[in-house]
Amino acid sequence: MSKQHARITASVYTSHVPAIGAALDLGKSDTDYWAPLFKGYEPSKQWMRDNRPDVIFLVYNDHATAFSLEMIPTFAIGCAAQFQPADEGWGARPVPPVTGHPELAAHIAQSVIQQDFDLTIVNKMDVDHGLTVPLSLMCGQPQAWPCPVVPFAVNVVQYPVPSGRRCFELGRAIRRAIESYDEPLNVHIWGTGGMSHQLQGPRAGLINREFDNAFLDRLIADPAGQAAVPHIDYVREAGSEGIELVMWLIARGAMADVAGGPAPRVVHRFYHVPASNTAVGHLILEEQ
Amino acid sequence: MSLNKPYTDVPGTTVFDADQSRKGYHLNQFCMSLMKEQNRERFRADERAYIDEWPMTEEQKQAVLARDLNRCILLGGNIYFLAKLGATDGRSFQYMAASMTGMSQEDYAAMMLAGGRSIEGNRKIGERKP
Picture 1 (tube, rainbow over the protein chains, first blue to last red):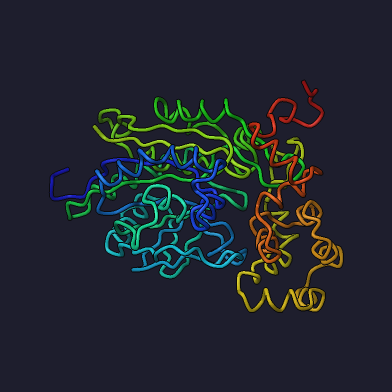
Picture 2 (cartoon, rainbow over the protein chains, first blue to last red):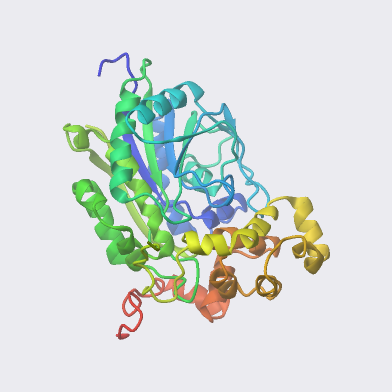
């Protein structure tokens, strides 16, 4: 694509545990418990300052916040000009509102729907920790987020949830959409959620370090292979909430190598246990 | 044809599928209502009166009043909805998770710090523990 078009320059992957947001908001990031986790994101914050995007396309899941059981869109794209941090029951997080990019979002919706993915267009929704915790981890605690964000919510709460393969193919379609947008925007695509965790039932607290690290290896080197892994493997091996990892495949599918280009460069990789109930994984891939 | 459920042999786990969701519709929508401060206040003031506004089964109501999250999940609740109930009580996700495992919160937190619950012996019902 020419320089007149938008391009994806990097993908970022991170867990989005609510307790991480609470730790930051309550000033606990320096404690023995949390310091090792935030240390793992120091290089990422510096990288964000050095590689500030024009827009972030942020894939996350809504945790029964904007979407109750009244309506459950499988893939929902936020097309509004602004999104407020949600009150999830503890009161809203004290973080800036999220500025959208309605023009780019509308373009992506049109392009991706015409590539046969049935997106739900959302013009009003609050965003929960799934979206704001990754922003906090990557940007710290600014007065305003560094750039507009297109929120992209995936249903991983009520089954059936989309397969890894479909998420990966959707990422490819999103890449084509972004690259056909007539403005030379630098776009990051972020995939969030995971890694292994289970928040419910007698098996709560499950962590599978081997599965998580094999997932990271394969996401980097063989994403199409990872995309073929069925849901049941995530549920069994990574816990019932580990299914969130399929969202990482959307961001990975949007990288150049999947479309026949060069492989991305691994800028940063980090893994930490625990954050509350969850294993935290993080990866930054830059296009070459 | 009924739903294909390859996940029923995962121990200690209830997958929130369409059958569970149908069973738990009103329970989960009640939880959802607790995202508004004025509803949290009304619920705290008189729990029984507030839940009686919702067409839940008596069994579901008792599970809510007892804060028996395993029971709530069995009866169609989903953890992300039930988290609003926990939040109304000022509880963290970790407190809620611990309450479902039969461990004290201290023991659960210590298990997480030590690397979490092992996958070994926890993949399939009936699997031998190492």
